[in-house]
Length: 181
Image (cartoon, rainbow, N blue to C red; front, side, top):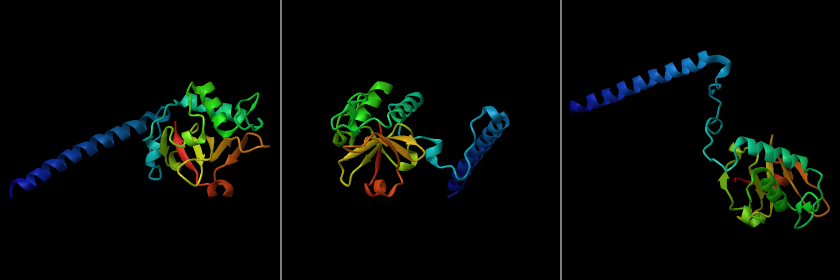
């Protein structure tokens, strides 16, 4: 019985030492000033501090994918299309953008894109992630997330590649899912 309090005391002393070290590190980081990474606030989510789902794209590639996808807005829709010259369908747009800007060849169909990469929650969406729509496990439409709650996609026959908001009523009704390539 006398051993138990000693065990807890050792743990508490170790925790106190760790707490002191952590406080010293935080103070040092605060003193560094402008050149440091901002410290997380109480409202900062874990997803903003640490991305638990790494992807194939580095930051530069994700930015390049995003900018290129935005540059294709207005390109005509064409079923089976996969080039700016001939037009795009949704998966053709994704394939062209990822292959030409990141050197990554995604699957050709939305059904195959449904299982490509890793599933992620909306809270950690980053530019370059995939947005998939469909009321079953298999997606029937897809686009590329470009930030600010928006995505680029090739919508349907007679349309053009567009930039749209994820929170639009139509897209929310399509039960969006997200994947990180």
